[in-house]
Image (cartoon, rainbow, N blue to C red; front, side, top):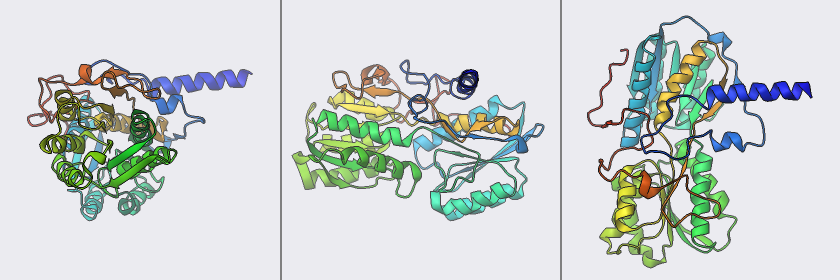
Length: 382
């Protein structure tokens, strides 16, 4: 009994350190800001990484190997990394940043260069999980701790992976659609980038849900590269092909989700006629949803994880244990009147959207309130 009590106290302590971190107020407003649901509802214990071997005195040189800044979400995640490096400027001597332009071959070369420059720790967002696995494994075996963020590699050869739950995102989106359609209807799936771990995990999780309902039919699935323009182009072609047979659109992000809604508008659909959509993060999708009366359900994938990865890096270099999978808090955002039994709203779309701000604003951030991705600058250690 005493052992169980001590274990409980230890878990509460770990929880308080890693899951109730300060500075998690997101720009979109109030709503659910508690611990990650996947932590609270997990049927087992969470794996922790012992980092005592990496403990060293500051100042540190941190390398950030970024897959790309090919869309506004990735730009915002980069800004989160820079902002949190600024907050830790008393311990960070240099933050070295590379951009692979979504090219895994270039990213392998980038990581090799960062290793040669003597970084104390690597933060990596992998362009492709399989392709980057060997170089991440090599860094780990050379004694350089690696913190993955957003996109992981296939193996477990890293210290911590900072993410929001891709599985929860995929499942919640699918479950909401199923319940919106009363278990019967035709769905279009518009995932992000083929081969990237977030997109592939979300697809698999969504299909787990859809597969339980024999009267839910996936008409077609097409990748969109998380591009509003490609999302619009793909959906325009699918509207021509299927028309009013489309009952709902599963999008794993608001980037292609905004393009999809625009395609329906340009195809002549009136306000209130556009099928339900899912998405995340991008203000424009919610602006369009409110304007054209589109039922929407969001579970964000916050770029805030870039900043949290820097915070985790500091703990690693101080020798503190860190969660092997570090999932940040999230919330359910649903259009008013369109909650379902499994998907109640933590906050409504109409209260979360910023109608007076730019459409390309990412809402799930902890950057300054006046943040503009096009003009943002911070004096982080270079």
